[in-house]
Length: 326
Image 1 (cartoon, rainbow, N blue to C red):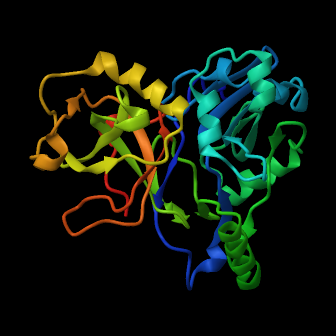
Image 2: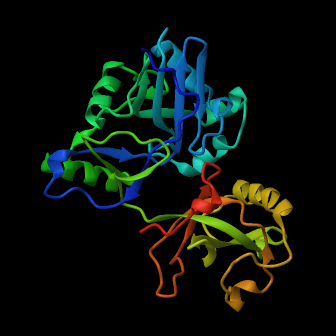
């Protein structure tokens, strides 16, 4: 009996970790793409897409419609990353910001900021759910579909047992300033919506999801607008203050943040711990509903981010799931 194509799949999530060691032969490696996770659903009526939290994002990325031509008269569910590239060919999360919040982008924006859909898993194909198949088998099936064309690509993975190629790949990701690698156990099933330890994020760059709990007005050129953001994360259910960020913004980002923060203002801090006085002077507090991402140089002994730099908003993540990333 054929399985029904799922209407909505929450992606499986990786845990932070290290490269495989003695058991490297059991693992595959992929590049960690700096983009937005998207599940796509391809069927004869057309292509749909949902984000990390299950919300519809079909109208944001018309490039995904090309999947219908690559899989004519087939039914498939694919897992991948929507990525924008800068002028040097590197993935740019900053550039993707111009697309990720825009429904029905006009042709000019699509030309100015094209995106690619990088597919790395196959969850359903022609009446068969593939969740319980090993990762290596799902990848073999994915490669057999020959999806690389136009804005769609499905790069192959690397066996972690090949030490020389692994070293070359690591060096390449560092030279190109890529986020890092994802290690995936070859025998691993796919568990929708779960964070698992048989997928591991191995990062070159320290990043942290953050909840915006307030902001401070700018000075000089930024006078009258957002100058810096007050950041937090959840620990045992409490919103904890972890510092502020005032670098990494473009003017476009600051304007967008001002518009989004205005309706969230609240008269008092919503942090569950005490925010140091140097951060409370002139602070404007907001309900903790917006999630962003920062790059940083580590953590202080007081549990503050060291030298954070803003990377962008993430509307694909829920504030309640923002926790300390090891």
